[in-house]
Length: 267
Image (cartoon, rainbow, N blue to C red):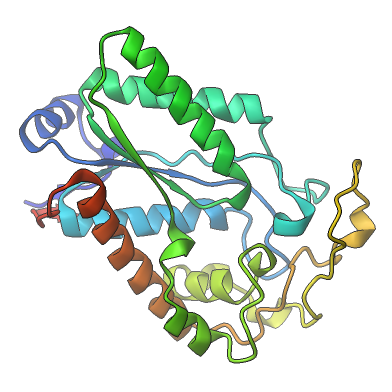
Protein backbone atom coordinates (compact mmCIF):
# COMPACT_ATOMS: atom_id res chain seq x y z
CA UNK A 1 0.00 0.00 0.00
CA UNK A 2 1.33 3.44 -0.91
CA UNK A 3 2.11 5.78 1.96
CA UNK A 4 0.73 9.28 2.21
CA UNK A 5 2.93 12.35 1.78
CA UNK A 6 0.93 14.28 4.40
CA UNK A 7 2.48 14.41 7.85
CA UNK A 8 -0.92 14.90 9.47
CA UNK A 9 -2.23 11.60 8.05
CA UNK A 10 0.60 9.52 9.54
CA UNK A 11 0.54 8.04 12.99
CA UNK A 12 3.47 9.10 15.14
CA UNK A 13 5.24 5.74 14.83
CA UNK A 14 5.24 5.79 11.03
CA UNK A 15 6.26 9.47 11.05
CA UNK A 16 9.21 8.71 13.30
CA UNK A 17 10.19 5.72 11.16
CA UNK A 18 10.14 7.71 7.94
CA UNK A 19 12.22 10.49 9.46
CA UNK A 20 14.84 7.99 10.68
CA UNK A 21 14.89 5.64 7.69
CA UNK A 22 14.26 7.99 4.76
CA UNK A 23 15.58 11.35 6.03
CA UNK A 24 13.00 13.17 3.89
CA UNK A 25 12.69 16.84 3.21
CA UNK A 26 9.70 18.11 5.17
CA UNK A 27 7.89 20.74 3.15
CA UNK A 28 5.93 23.45 4.98
CA UNK A 29 3.50 25.52 2.86
CA UNK A 30 2.75 29.00 4.21
CA UNK A 31 -0.18 30.99 2.87
CA UNK A 32 -2.83 33.45 3.98
CA UNK A 33 -6.55 34.04 4.27
CA UNK A 34 -6.91 37.00 1.92
CA UNK A 35 -9.55 38.24 -0.50
CA UNK A 36 -8.85 37.32 -4.12
CA UNK A 37 -11.48 39.30 -5.96
CA UNK A 38 -15.10 38.27 -6.55
CA UNK A 39 -14.17 35.19 -8.58
CA UNK A 40 -11.72 33.30 -6.34
CA UNK A 41 -11.86 31.90 -2.79
CA UNK A 42 -9.93 33.56 0.00
CA UNK A 43 -7.56 30.65 0.65
CA UNK A 44 -5.81 30.62 -2.76
CA UNK A 45 -2.49 31.44 -1.10
CA UNK A 46 -2.77 28.29 0.99
CA UNK A 47 -4.30 25.95 -1.59
CA UNK A 48 -1.75 26.60 -4.32
CA UNK A 49 1.53 26.01 -2.40
CA UNK A 50 -0.03 23.03 -0.65
CA UNK A 51 -0.91 21.41 -3.98
CA UNK A 52 2.55 22.09 -5.36
CA UNK A 53 4.26 20.66 -2.28
CA UNK A 54 2.11 17.54 -2.41
CA UNK A 55 2.84 17.04 -6.11
CA UNK A 56 6.57 17.43 -5.43
CA UNK A 57 6.47 15.04 -2.49
CA UNK A 58 4.52 12.44 -4.47
CA UNK A 59 7.36 12.47 -6.97
CA UNK A 60 10.26 12.56 -4.53
CA UNK A 61 9.14 10.63 -1.46
CA UNK A 62 9.33 13.65 0.80
CA UNK A 63 6.70 14.82 3.31
CA UNK A 64 4.32 17.78 3.51
CA UNK A 65 3.43 19.36 6.84
CA UNK A 66 0.06 21.01 7.51
CA UNK A 67 -0.13 24.43 5.93
CA UNK A 68 0.21 27.63 7.95
CA UNK A 69 -2.93 29.23 6.56
CA UNK A 70 -2.71 32.73 8.02
CA UNK A 71 -0.14 35.22 6.79
CA UNK A 72 1.12 38.76 7.24
CA UNK A 73 -1.16 41.72 6.55
CA UNK A 74 -2.29 42.17 2.96
CA UNK A 75 -0.67 45.19 1.33
CA UNK A 76 -2.53 47.44 -1.14
CA UNK A 77 0.03 47.08 -3.95
CA UNK A 78 0.30 43.30 -3.77
CA UNK A 79 -2.90 42.02 -2.15
CA UNK A 80 -5.42 44.82 -2.22
CA UNK A 81 -5.01 45.70 1.45
CA UNK A 82 -6.18 44.51 4.81
CA UNK A 83 -9.47 46.44 4.72
CA UNK A 84 -11.43 43.83 2.76
CA UNK A 85 -13.82 41.69 4.84
CA UNK A 86 -12.51 38.16 5.19
CA UNK A 87 -8.85 39.07 4.88
CA UNK A 88 -7.62 37.74 8.23
CA UNK A 89 -3.99 38.49 8.99
CA UNK A 90 -1.29 38.10 11.59
CA UNK A 91 0.99 40.75 13.03
CA UNK A 92 4.52 40.28 11.75
CA UNK A 93 5.80 39.24 15.17
CA UNK A 94 3.11 36.58 15.48
CA UNK A 95 3.98 35.03 12.11
CA UNK A 96 7.69 35.12 12.95
CA UNK A 97 7.13 33.26 16.21
CA UNK A 98 4.77 30.69 14.65
CA UNK A 99 7.38 29.90 11.98
CA UNK A 100 10.16 29.83 14.59
CA UNK A 101 8.28 27.48 16.89
CA UNK A 102 7.19 25.08 14.14
CA UNK A 103 10.75 24.85 12.79
CA UNK A 104 12.11 24.11 16.25
CA UNK A 105 9.52 21.37 16.76
CA UNK A 106 10.45 19.73 13.46
CA UNK A 107 14.09 19.81 14.49
CA UNK A 108 13.17 18.18 17.80
CA UNK A 109 11.51 15.35 15.85
CA UNK A 110 14.72 14.76 13.92
CA UNK A 111 13.97 16.69 10.73
CA UNK A 112 17.22 17.94 9.21
CA UNK A 113 16.00 19.05 5.76
CA UNK A 114 13.15 21.52 5.71
CA UNK A 115 11.52 23.59 2.98
CA UNK A 116 9.18 26.54 3.41
CA UNK A 117 7.08 27.22 0.32
CA UNK A 118 5.55 30.68 0.47
CA UNK A 119 2.24 31.33 -1.26
CA UNK A 120 1.68 34.89 0.00
CA UNK A 121 3.90 37.71 -1.26
CA UNK A 122 3.76 39.65 2.01
CA UNK A 123 5.11 36.79 4.13
CA UNK A 124 8.63 36.88 2.76
CA UNK A 125 10.80 38.68 5.31
CA UNK A 126 8.79 37.39 8.28
CA UNK A 127 9.60 33.84 7.17
CA UNK A 128 13.25 34.82 6.90
CA UNK A 129 13.20 36.18 10.46
CA UNK A 130 11.42 33.09 11.78
CA UNK A 131 14.01 30.88 10.11
CA UNK A 132 16.87 32.96 11.49
CA UNK A 133 15.55 32.92 15.07
CA UNK A 134 14.87 29.17 14.93
CA UNK A 135 18.36 28.36 13.68
CA UNK A 136 19.94 30.62 16.30
CA UNK A 137 18.01 29.01 19.13
CA UNK A 138 18.61 25.50 17.82
CA UNK A 139 22.36 26.14 17.75
CA UNK A 140 22.16 27.06 21.42
CA UNK A 141 20.50 23.67 22.00
CA UNK A 142 23.29 21.87 20.15
CA UNK A 143 21.40 21.30 16.88
CA UNK A 144 23.48 22.83 14.11
CA UNK A 145 22.80 20.55 11.14
CA UNK A 146 19.30 21.66 10.13
CA UNK A 147 19.19 23.07 6.60
CA UNK A 148 16.25 25.10 5.35
CA UNK A 149 15.29 26.09 1.80
CA UNK A 150 12.72 28.83 1.16
CA UNK A 151 10.87 28.56 -2.16
CA UNK A 152 8.46 31.18 -3.52
CA UNK A 153 6.73 28.95 -6.07
CA UNK A 154 5.99 31.68 -8.63
CA UNK A 155 9.71 32.21 -9.27
CA UNK A 156 9.81 28.95 -11.25
CA UNK A 157 7.70 30.25 -14.13
CA UNK A 158 9.83 30.46 -17.27
CA UNK A 159 9.97 33.52 -19.48
CA UNK A 160 8.63 31.42 -22.34
CA UNK A 161 5.50 30.59 -20.34
CA UNK A 162 5.04 34.20 -19.23
CA UNK A 163 5.29 35.34 -22.85
CA UNK A 164 2.71 32.76 -23.90
CA UNK A 165 0.27 33.48 -21.08
CA UNK A 166 0.62 37.27 -21.22
CA UNK A 167 0.80 38.18 -24.93
CA UNK A 168 0.26 41.87 -24.10
CA UNK A 169 3.05 41.90 -21.51
CA UNK A 170 3.50 40.55 -17.98
CA UNK A 171 2.29 43.09 -15.37
CA UNK A 172 4.61 41.79 -12.64
CA UNK A 173 3.85 39.48 -9.72
CA UNK A 174 2.47 42.11 -7.30
CA UNK A 175 -0.22 43.20 -9.79
CA UNK A 176 -1.00 39.57 -10.55
CA UNK A 177 -3.02 39.36 -7.34
CA UNK A 178 -6.22 37.50 -8.32
CA UNK A 179 -5.05 37.87 -11.91
CA UNK A 180 -4.35 35.51 -14.78
CA UNK A 181 -1.80 33.26 -13.11
CA UNK A 182 -3.63 32.63 -9.84
CA UNK A 183 -6.96 32.23 -11.59
CA UNK A 184 -5.52 29.85 -14.20
CA UNK A 185 -3.80 27.76 -11.53
CA UNK A 186 -7.03 27.58 -9.53
CA UNK A 187 -8.96 26.59 -12.68
CA UNK A 188 -6.50 23.72 -13.06
CA UNK A 189 -6.35 22.66 -9.40
CA UNK A 190 -9.78 23.57 -8.02
CA UNK A 191 -12.14 24.56 -10.87
CA UNK A 192 -15.24 24.28 -8.68
CA UNK A 193 -13.94 27.19 -6.57
CA UNK A 194 -13.59 29.61 -9.52
CA UNK A 195 -16.42 31.71 -10.94
CA UNK A 196 -15.27 33.14 -14.28
CA UNK A 197 -18.58 34.98 -14.66
CA UNK A 198 -17.46 37.32 -11.87
CA UNK A 199 -13.96 38.08 -13.16
CA UNK A 200 -13.37 41.87 -13.12
CA UNK A 201 -12.48 43.46 -16.46
CA UNK A 202 -10.93 46.72 -15.23
CA UNK A 203 -7.35 47.63 -16.21
CA UNK A 204 -4.43 46.87 -13.86
CA UNK A 205 -4.25 49.00 -10.71
CA UNK A 206 -2.17 52.16 -11.08
CA UNK A 207 -0.47 52.97 -7.79
CA UNK A 208 1.82 55.93 -7.00
CA UNK A 209 5.46 55.09 -6.38
CA UNK A 210 5.28 56.26 -2.78
CA UNK A 211 3.38 54.60 0.07
CA UNK A 212 1.12 56.45 2.51
CA UNK A 213 0.13 55.35 6.03
CA UNK A 214 -2.63 54.89 6.84
CA UNK A 215 -3.33 53.94 3.25
CA UNK A 216 -6.43 55.07 1.41
CA UNK A 217 -8.63 52.09 0.43
CA UNK A 218 -9.95 54.18 -2.46
CA UNK A 219 -6.60 53.75 -4.23
CA UNK A 220 -7.32 50.00 -4.58
CA UNK A 221 -9.76 48.62 -7.20
CA UNK A 222 -13.03 47.96 -5.40
CA UNK A 223 -13.08 44.40 -6.80
CA UNK A 224 -9.96 43.49 -4.80
CA UNK A 225 -8.27 42.16 -7.93
CA UNK A 226 -5.23 44.16 -9.06
CA UNK A 227 -5.50 43.05 -12.69
CA UNK A 228 -8.07 41.26 -14.81
CA UNK A 229 -8.09 37.46 -15.12
CA UNK A 230 -10.38 37.43 -18.16
CA UNK A 231 -7.83 35.46 -20.26
CA UNK A 232 -7.23 32.82 -17.57
CA UNK A 233 -7.69 29.16 -18.55
CA UNK A 234 -7.12 25.78 -16.95
CA UNK A 235 -4.62 24.97 -19.71
CA UNK A 236 -2.52 27.97 -18.71
CA UNK A 237 -2.82 26.88 -15.11
CA UNK A 238 -1.44 23.45 -15.94
CA UNK A 239 1.51 25.05 -17.73
CA UNK A 240 2.31 27.04 -14.60
CA UNK A 241 1.83 24.16 -12.18
CA UNK A 242 3.99 21.79 -14.24
CA UNK A 243 6.80 24.34 -14.20
CA UNK A 244 6.37 25.07 -10.51
CA UNK A 245 6.58 21.38 -9.62
CA UNK A 246 9.55 20.73 -11.92
CA UNK A 247 11.30 23.82 -10.57
CA UNK A 248 10.72 22.87 -6.96
CA UNK A 249 11.96 19.31 -7.50
CA UNK A 250 15.13 20.67 -9.10
CA UNK A 251 15.52 23.24 -6.32
CA UNK A 252 15.35 20.57 -3.62
CA UNK A 253 18.00 18.51 -5.41
CA UNK A 254 20.23 21.56 -5.65
CA UNK A 255 19.57 22.77 -2.11
CA UNK A 256 20.17 19.46 -0.42
CA UNK A 257 22.79 18.09 -2.81
CA UNK A 258 21.06 14.87 -3.78
CA UNK A 259 18.54 13.58 -6.32
CA UNK A 260 15.03 13.20 -4.99
CA UNK A 261 14.12 9.60 -5.86
CA UNK A 262 10.47 8.63 -6.20
CA UNK A 263 9.03 6.22 -3.63
CA UNK A 264 5.67 4.61 -2.88
CA UNK A 265 3.72 7.68 -1.97
CA UNK A 266 0.35 9.17 -2.74
CA UNK A 267 -0.79 12.77 -2.50
